[in-house]
Length: 505
Ligand code: TNX
Image (cartoon, rainbow, N blue to C red; front, top):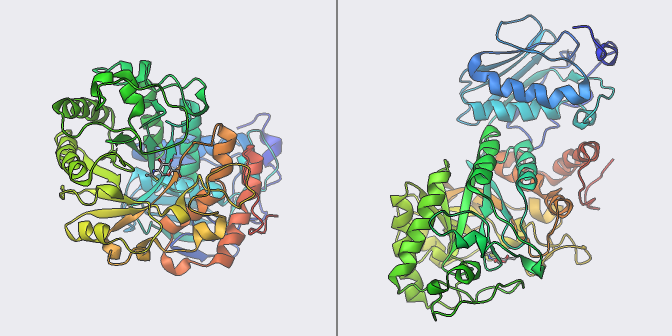
């Protein structure tokens, strides 16, 4: 394919790869380098994909074209010397993939589109940091030879963005999805409602957004997602194999809803909008029928907009609701979620309520013992681990950090990395742990730059805990691989915390 980009690529053939096959984050389950078997990308390189692998092939081409300046056409017809993507089961589970790099061709196989997507992210990381450039730069664009056979340790690998305390528009959320996909995280939990704002349109209760979405922490203008906005986020995430988990926080954290519909307020008095950062003062009345018709309407609409299996019902910090009334409330809300065709996810405070089929508790405590959670697990619940002193992305890195909370302590990279999600909670067996999730609360986070500063580099540390086999856990090796991500973020124009724990180049 002649053209202006040819000059960029002619110098490439014959050069050696500059990234080692195992220098991928999260580190793959199995890496077998084949020295001397590198594959150079050239102006003639074709990406070959059968129709079922076409979306993954297009994504790969879209990721590689801007920096390499190579045409990388995607073709259905097999071609010699191609990068081939195929849906074919390499026996590595629903998200696994196998990557074979030889001098005469590259082959990526997976049983599912998600597996192909993860393999595409691996391919991207096997090229030098310049691949992140939005405009053509010099390579060499050479993939290291050998075989990677990879699959995740946990099925649930998530992050949460609080869009209620500060509102973030669709583009900012999509950017967060990009960071998740890069590190093979597969769930984006959106904290859509809280005291300070209601951020998702509900047709049957329109004032929730019109009134309840008007402001945010600090009193600035808030915002909300229309149904189409939300669908756009869901679709963009799904294309990147990220499942959106919507949270409607109940029965506490509901001041914004009460400002919109005063008749929901337990004392019948419409409260004022709240723009501070306290928690635990608002609630829906567990003893009124109106509460449950409201909850059914809201959860029904949100469920209908959400293809993923989970509805997160919050459940945290309902300090004004007595324990027995709280348990009755959760006992009634869980079947509403089931009626909407979804599985319950909730903060671990919902543990004392009755078991409902499949329900998942998100543990955000900081103690290794929680008998109430352990009991709920014995009754059938499973757990997603979000211990605040390890996974909370809103915590400061050090006491001197410019942004963040500190109630769960400072969390720099090593603290985020050096623990085991399967072994954290006593009396909760590893089989009950679905995975982990890293919440970013946004009382003090106000912009895309601040989101990225809090996410990077802790998000990749948590992603590796969720993906990589436990026997790869090694701080010295991890921090060296993490260091290599720094130039990638810089090339992409993404800010991050230059932790002194990491030997950045
Ligand atoms: C506790 S963690 C909360 C949130 C706050 C967060 C700040 C949880 C389920 N509830 O309401 O934003 O601490 O770190």
